[in-house]
Amino acid sequence: MSRKFIPVEEVAREWMKDPAFRAEYDALEEEFELAKALIRARGEASMTQAEVAEAMGTTQAVIARLESGRAMPSTRTLQRFAKATNSRLRISFEPADSGDAVQR
Image 1 (tube, one colour):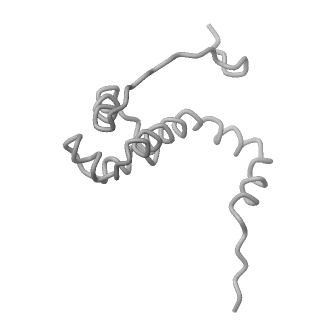
Image 2: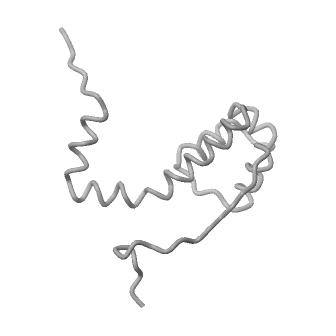
């Protein structure tokens, strides 16, 4: 029996047409960005997850969870990650899109 595989990009394009899916996906943007930033910092330091974990005094599983976006780390944890990867933590606030404005 032959199995047909559909490229993930094709499936994602279809899912993005659903407004409910798109709204949930967009709501996770900040978490995805944090995960990408952690992975980028580790990559630029040419370190494995295990090496970062050792430098932070934690386990590789903790680093994997941080990089997966499933955990929202504290500022202290982010500072430790930055130190372990010989990088600098920068946090900024940017104006929200008009659709994201909070009503007062």
